[in-house]
Image 1 (cartoon, rainbow, N blue to C red):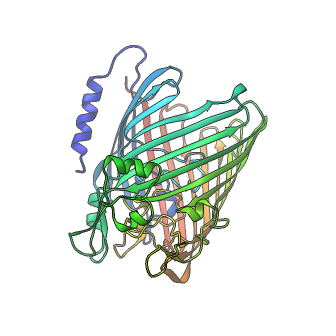
Image 2 (cartoon, helix red, strand yellow):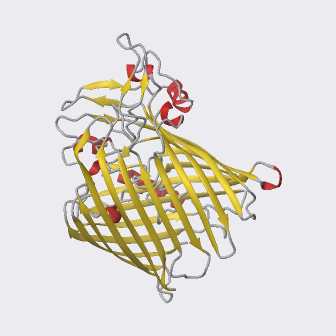
Image 3 (tube, rainbow, N blue to C red):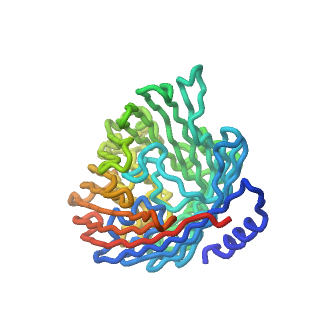
Length: 485
């Protein structure tokens, strides 16, 4: 059951070994979620940006139980842990550990080991379509991560602050790929994961205006690619200690690496430049942002035009306002530095570094984990593919996304998400006809004051178009959380 037994043992050992002094608190969460509807797939907004916990199959549900200890950020040293078990209905796996991690805080540093849910680096988790590198759309990837998770001043008078992280991990979708790949499709086993980012914020936190610049990069490396329809390996990517270093820099592969890594760099790399300008007012905050994607040197040199995620966000500081937050985002990925790519060889001694194929790769399935896009959800997840192809069919898209949330009463809040999008295929296999889709979701949550720790959720969502199909669904959820010790 996907190592579920090991995670339960880990949970029991962790609880037994925990201290019982007055500073220790253990929390619990029990949650049930059911989606009923009709169509080829679960509606887009009922499934995406939910940590990969919702099945692509319509009419599904899960029961989730978690126990955690949070890090005390007010202390110089503190630690936390979480074990989060999920059992599902009408999904590809009946039970698994969604989260299982230990993290420790030492001064301003944080060390995390395990699988931990994380959302967008900067954008609004509830309202955004998702960051380019990581959005919280897919299942967590087990990893070791060292980070500065909160802004740390690095200049006199706090005028410049820093956030940064570096992580290495392993994808845990080997069994998924073996079972889901088509009879004539390739798949990969034992892929490794790497991510690093740094962000600089200019402007003292007490001032009205600030700016943020940063870079977020990630890579897949290592593992073995198996041939089309068989079980014989056709490409093996090395994962020695030197390869971890070559992915970090990044550098070209050595003699033991496939030719694609020797003429380029080790692994499948992607990333984004992040630009933000914001203001803090007495009763509201606002910002504009742009995330510029790159898959190789052409994108890093802005030769892919104005591709990227453009956004505007407003948030109110009022208590329980009708409109708490508004996010409007425009995603355009049609340029991709042009349609042609050629590595230098004896036939053509001049390299042409176009054809970026965002999220894709010629050998790996691309930036996907267990069928879900790891980055922005408007790049359709390979889990929607019906032919067993595990890669991205539509990475050239144009989309407009809107998110609004607020309060109907002090005990009832709502969220509205909607988008329109068009897809042209990818840089190498375009669609014969442009695919279009309209998606909408309205969700309400009830947090009764007299029932502490209880939350009730209801939602409705529809899709209309040729990207995800015509779908509709109703969501009902109930959650109870509180302190266990």
